[in-house]
Length: 318
Image 1 (cartoon, rainbow, N blue to C red):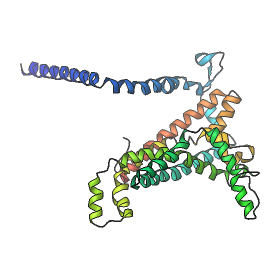
Image 2: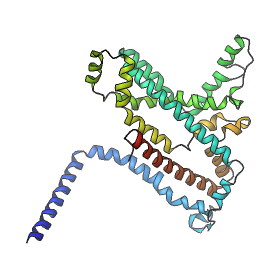
Image 3: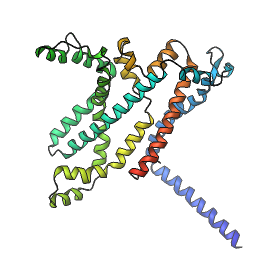
């Protein structure tokens, strides 16, 4: 009897849980409907294409399709790893990604703290609007802006150099200047938008902490160091981890718009190389193999970085 009673109790508990879950879903149906949109997007454009990832192991021919193409094993992975440009592409890609990470994230944090600490509401709105506006501009427009600033003939920066008696510099074709242009222009375009995340985290800090610190005579720097930064540390860790996961995505659109043949040695990244090999030369299997390689490396980096940050900051994604 006791076993039957326990089984009935478990069944009743399960039924109650299902009813309460159904009630909660109906109560917040608008939110679940909004959540359905990104889920459908990821399913169609992210998860279904995983099935076609098998062409990385096949001699893919569009006429024969995915199933009709012959298997080739790991030949395309070997072709990429043994390529003359492999280490150069890897160096450029990782270098740009880490450079952007080291510049953009601190810049976004500093901008968020400055906006948050400002007591002039109008000034805050103006600065925030002006700084996140570039995010909505495409890299085609950004290239035009950079060209007007850096052009050797009539660029603003070169006009200043001439004013002081110097010789104009073609920054966009200089192997020394190009990496700095890529990293700094990315920070300029993205730091305002990135600051929104940190501003949202800052707004969640209890104002009583700042009031107590001010009573104790803490300066603005001390309040930032001992209250602001530790309070948003978990958000900083999350943002960094997400960026580490895409460490081999160095910004195809940006580099594609800015680079040219003279700076291939320092500008060419994995994505631009794949574009030329996969789409222009129709090597779809090779391009897919490189994509799988990038995904595996990104996954391993996220796992390793997550374990490291859990030890250091006691927080992580999982």
